[in-house]
Image (cartoon, rainbow, N blue to C red; front, top):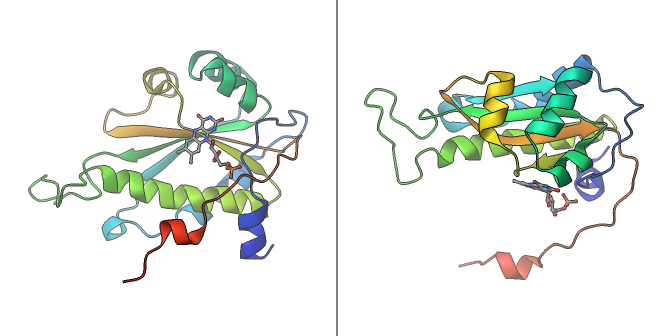
Length: 179
Ligand SMILES: Cc1cc2nc3c(=O)[nH]c(=O)nc-3n(C[C@H](O)[C@H](O)[C@H](O)COP(=O)(O)O)c2cc1C
């Protein structure tokens, strides 16, 4: 699919077809594309935890997501995205942040990777929903995410069983200034 078509056709999906299974191979391919994103000093601090098993998915949906997100994500694989804290944006010798953004750079790097993630998924015929509303403590406990990682989003990954309308975007004039 052409890049512009990918951008235009990707939508957040809130109804997944649970009869169609996401494979480990697809997830590996998607994460291979995600990691091609640029990152602070090429540190690549983003991490992915992919839940595929029925038992774990059931627990995740009931314990780690608010009910409306659990409803949207049913039938999809769930990918927790994290980054290693105090690394991107930090002077690794002194442990001090290089500027006022601090761990903001870790979030930035993960966001860049996650855009690759969702576009590669679309190219492979899969759909996604990024979820920022989630219980990070419960996720950390269930998945056993190390303390040094910051839990950020959960991405539902699966096959759409709906075709949502295109969402509106701001006009370029509103968000771009030339000086
Ligand atoms: C960081 C982030 C967090 C989000 N969290 C949620 C969420 O918790 N639940 C949800 O239904 N959608 C969530 N979304 C999806 C947005 O609502 C959606 O991307 C936006 O409305 C634009 O629609 P589109 O993705 O179809 O273009 C999130 C998106 C982003 C980027």
